[in-house]
Structures are given as C-alpha cells and as structure tokens.
Image 1 (cartoon, rainbow, N blue to C red):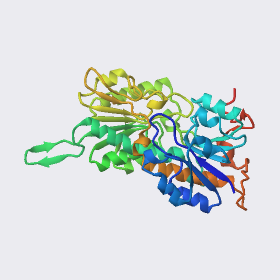
Image 2 (cartoon, rainbow, N blue to C red; image 1 turned 45 degrees about the vertical axis):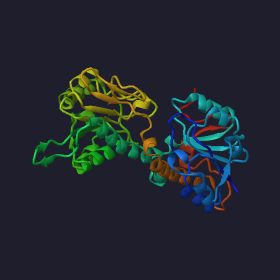
Image 3 (cartoon, helix red, strand yellow; image 1 turned 180 degrees about the vertical axis):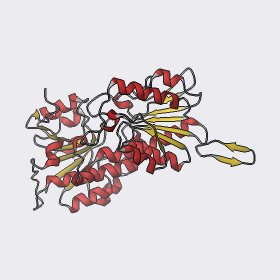
Length: 377
C-alpha cells in the first residue's frame, strides 16, 4: 500500500493545506494510506479530528509523517527541514514555482526526490481535474474583487434612495484569464459597471458574455496574440504603446482596477504606469494579482497597501487564495487527488508511468538531477 504524507505548510502566510478530510477518505478508498502532520489543516479550518475521522493517521512532526512516505503532497515547495527527511525516490507533488524557487528545486534534486510541479500539468481535457492554476486563479479573481471593494470604501451597485442616487462603481479588469473572468463575474454580481481588456482575441466574446465591455486595440498583432496553449504572448513595444494610450484615457475614469496578467517563467508584464496611477481619482483602488511575480503595476509593493500622493490605493496582497483557505484547500486537494491517481497502475500498485503525457510534462527532478527541459542549465 502506497503511503501519502501531508505536512503542515511552513511558508509565512500560507494557510492552505494539500489534503482535506474529503480527499483523505477518497485517497484511502483508492488504496493509499495517509499520514497527516498534526495541525496541517488548522489554518484552513480543518481540525485534526476530522482527518482522524476520515481514516488518516496523525504524526506529531514532519519527520514522523515522512518516515515511511512514498508520496508527499504539498501546497508550496517543501522547506529545507522537510527535504532533509525525504527518502530517495519519494514522489513529491506541489506548486513548486520552479522558475523562481531554484534553491528548493536543487534541494529536491539532491535528495533524489521525484518531484512534480503542478503548474506544469498540461492544459488538456484529461488533466482538467488536476489544473491547480485554474482552480486557484478562479478563487484569486473572486477574492481580488472583494479586497478591492473593501478598500474602495463606497458601494458597488447603483442605489436609488429617497436621499438621492449613488452611482455604480466602475471596475476595469486587465487580463482575462481564469482569474480575470471570475473577477468580471464577481464585480458584475456586486452591481459594478465592468470593462475588461486582454491581448488575446478569443477573450472578447467571453468578456461580453459576462455582461462586461471589451477594450483593446484590435489590429493584426492583436488577432494573433495567443499561444497554442491558450496563454498570452508578449506583445511588441509598438502594440504596447497603442494599447497604453487607449487604456490611459479609460483608466483615469475607473474606481477599481484589477490586474491579472502573468507569463509563465517570466516577470509579470507592466500594465499600469506611474503616470496612469497618478491620473486616477483619489480613493480609487488597484489590486495587483501578479504581485508575487513582480507585479503589473508600477509602485505596487508585495504584501502592502501602498497609498499614492494622489490618494490611490495599490493593493499588493500576496496569496489571495489563502484568504479563503477552506475552499482553496478543498479545490487544490481535489486537484492533487486526481494527480496522485496517476501514480497507481491498474492493480492499484505504486507504479508511475513516466511516459504518461501528464506526468512527463510535470516532472522536474528525478534520480538526483533536474530533468525538465525548461529548467536545465
């Protein structure tokens, strides 16, 4: 019987957990045994007693949890103290942030762990249930609107009262991936007037289907601005200048701006300049969802609410899914549960098929070395 360990997240501010009682029960039914480090789910409102009731064994420390583990499930990359306890050949599945957190990657390689970066799971139909980027971005988009609305300090919907009419808030979403679409939907539910922009032409119809207005320079470069994998391409300087001119006149009129643009393996593109921030009204708000990869907004600061001289609040809130940890953990745990199923053969034995297109795409370290082609050298 393959043994799964779930250890407590040690990263500052990380409230999520890699397994919840629901997935523990299902993993055990699938033929795994599960050991959970005591307190692993407390920050996500999953007490130890619930894991015991689901059939897990509790371990006092990470060392105890990992002593006989064949598989380690994590939210973030294991810390050095955990890596030191990993047996050679242990299968590790987590969001490893491999382009930035090279020390952890090297540590996993040195420990001879077989590590999988969940960010690298391909976006194919068979892998939809394992898509952690989508499950967490969806919640981040929702939470970004909630954070923005709270910081804005005024109502979102139009209100007609005996004392007069209150205008609806104007919300502008920059980047219409999973997070952006959920941000549009959430802002619309709250009654805001929503506009959105993206360099990918396919998003125009999606934006309009949610009741928002699409804003973009729709030239020939725009029409070819999407990769085969569905990600945005980096645009030319000429296009960026034209788009910036269009956005500048629009952004000055907005109450809340939410930026969501990310390019895998690269710093986040700058979407909002200091001049554009300065053009906004006092009391308006910008929420930068890309802050952990350098940010889309000039002047945004990781982990801070920065108030500019003209009274604009720039929110650099890290780990937005972690602010709704119970739901974020539940979705992430289901992603990992589906992924862990690939480790078993038809007889229920631990025998990963490394030629499987999903495992092959996500594999980053094996046999003491970094094996992913995008991470070598």
